[in-house]
Image 1 (cartoon, rainbow, N blue to C red):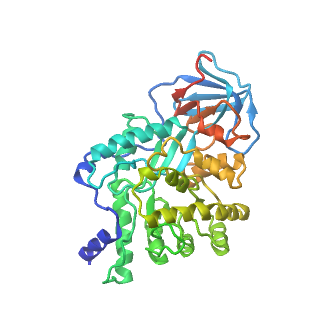
Image 2 (cartoon, one colour):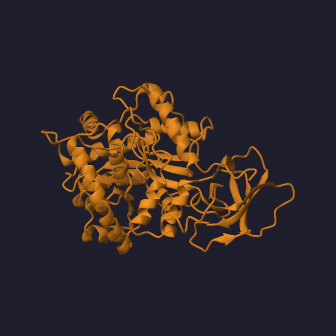
Image 3 (cartoon, rainbow, N blue to C red):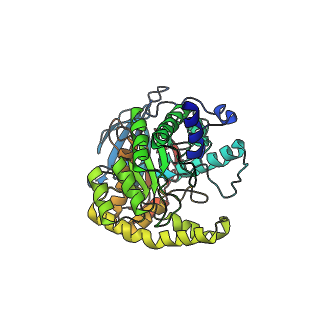
Length: 426
C-alpha cells in the first residue's frame, strides 16, 4: 500500500522529492524568533510621526528604543538613555515593516524548465534584496517546485544575503489532469497526508495547495473537500497552516469548509462563499494588481491566448468581488503574488486595494498587523510595540492620505539593523 501511495504522490504534486543538489544547499532553518545576542547596544529612533500598526491614531514626536533586535519601549517624547545610538527620522512617518502574504521570490522572466538551481538562487537573491529594500521585511513565499525557497530562507537567516523573513512552502500540492484510473478515496487521502509530511520534513513553514486549476470562473476542482481537509489536519499536526489557490466559486467554498487559513485570489466569490469566509474567519488574499502587471508586460510572458483571456477576466472580475467582500466584512490580507518584474513593487497591491474601496489605514493594517496574524507571527512582527522585532520602515509623506507613499520607502530596518536610510545627512 505504501508503494502505491508514493506513486500517487508523484501524480498529485508539482515536485515532492527535493533534488539531492538542492538538499546540499538547504540547512536546518533557524528559529524565526531567535534574537541576536551578539551585542547590547541601545538604539533610539526619533520619529516625526509614528503609525504603530495597532489601529490607534498616529503619534507625533515618538521614540522607539531597540536592543538585541527587539523593541524595548515606544512612546511620545520618551527619554533616550545616555549612550544610545540615535537615528533621526523626525522628517518621516515611521511604520511597522510591511508584510507580503503571497510572493514568488524564485520566479523571474527568463525561467527555463532546465534552469539550474544556481541560476535560480542568483535571481532569487536579487528578488529578495529588492523586496526588502522596498520595505517588505517579511513575506510568505507560496510554491517552488524544487524547494529553492527553503535555501533562500536559510541563507537569509544565516546572514549570507539580505532579504526579508520568509515563511516558505516549497512545492505546492497540485493534481495534474485526471488520472483515468482514479484511485480510491482512501488512497488519495493517504497520499495527500504523505505529501504534507514530506514537505514538513523538507522544511516547510506553510503548506500551499491548488484547489482549482487555471484562473477562470469554471476552473475545475483539483482536490475534493475531503482531501483538502486531510491536508489541513496533517499540517495542523506540525502547527502549520494551509494556503489555498482557488479562483472558482466552488473551489473557494470547498477550501473554506475544509479549514484552510487563507484563500489566495478568491476571484469568483458569491454571497454564500462570503458568508462562509466570515463564519470560518478565513483570510482572503486577493492579489488585485497581478493581472494588470502581466497585461502591462505582455512581451515578457509567453502565455497562450486563452491564458491572456483569463487574465483579462481576472482584471475585470476581481475588483467587484473585492468590494463585495470588503463591504461584508471578510478578513482581507495583502499579498502581491509577486512574480517576474514585480519584486520590489509589492506595495502597488496596496494602491489597488485602496482604489477598490479600502481606506489607507485598512490597507496598511492588511500589510502589517493582519498579515502577521495570518502568518501566525503576531507575537513578533506587524506592530511597533515592546517585544516585537525592530522591523521598521519610513516615508517622507503621509501614507494615511496617499497610500502610494509606500511605493517610495526611504528607510528600512530589519531586526534593528538599518538596511536603507535615505534620510541621512538631510
